[in-house]
Image (cartoon, rainbow, N blue to C red; front, side, top):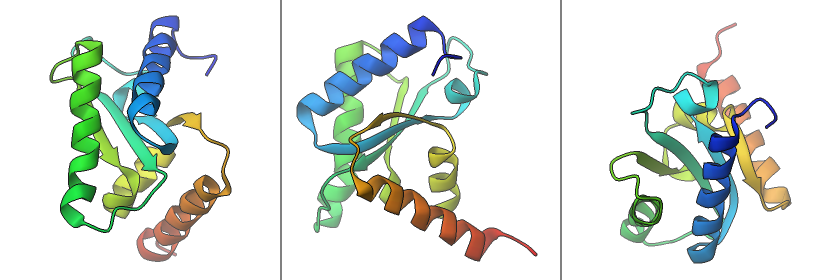
Length: 130
């Protein structure tokens, strides 16, 4: 992350701390304009999350990233500037964009590599053209 600004690194550390204080997470990614270094002052923070546990209830599964997003907006006072998605609950092209952003938190468990590998395989199988 040495190419990132100190302000961006500080914000990512704060996001990590707040998120891990309330959720069990295996990995977090910054993607979109901020990860590419193309953000404007009003750009949102696109954060992809690989939660540690699977929620069987589809409503709970859909609400969990929204709950984290609301928590981050409130704690960081960045209302309307946070966008949090569950990496396992979005379409493969978005999954691909997320894992090709910047992973700023990794719990160091094999599951992170397995999920990233499965996303890569799915993209190669379903979206690559020979």
